[in-house]
Length: 317
Image 1 (cartoon, rainbow, N blue to C red):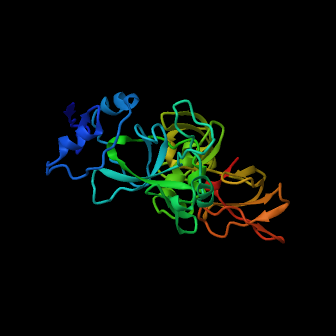
Image 2 (cartoon, rainbow, N blue to C red):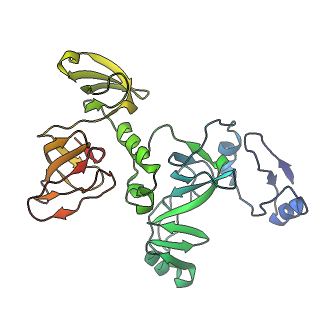
Image 3 (cartoon, rainbow, N blue to C red):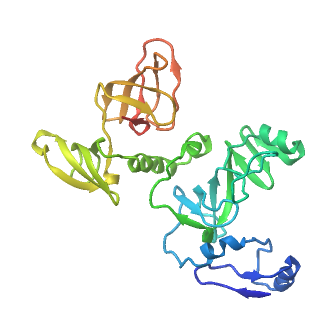
């Protein structure tokens, strides 16, 4: 049996042994060991976890973080809470990995990420294993699940903050718990900005070029070369700006699609002050109303000719 600690992983002692009883015996009577619940590390995760140098990046609520060890290794989660009494852990929300009876597993032996409801888990594991706490919220195997997502207390040493948004955040956008979390709004805004592509029409919203409209020509390292189009006195120039100083810009006649639903259609009017787009849903041949400027409202079909609103953060050309 051997034991060691690393400065890059504060508050943790690593013990290598063939029998778990030897580990319990090793820490028995040590007053400095407060948490007696062991966290097992698979041999395949040793290098990734122990070879990392100490990171000065602070993990805060509203960030995306990649897990490098444990059940959610290589999964990206949303940091929900960081100001907790235990300064070495944070609360992270993941798409769950739960074994489905008779279901397929990935090559590494782990079940694939999948959203679960209390009804589905009850059918799989029985009513005694699932405790319903509220609508769309339940307890399973000592973990809280809400809107199909799992809420986990994760060691800081298991997480690495992402510099850019993940490619798919749909499961989180669909969650009422996440949508109502205040830090998620800037997180969603950044996702839209990270999704900017060459050829997009954009408008500058901050910095010395605020108000200028143009088209993206080149994107590299979170900086964008923009060919200016408006105002007239600033047109036909090439300026380099931060990716996070711009938003999509729409004009009547543009074809747009809601990022979070199947709604798509043609823009009929734009309210730049409220950053809202009015469009006619072609698929449903009806109007869609987004009654507030919040980017989290999913489409709701309205009968009759009413003005439909969709937030600019929801739209793509």
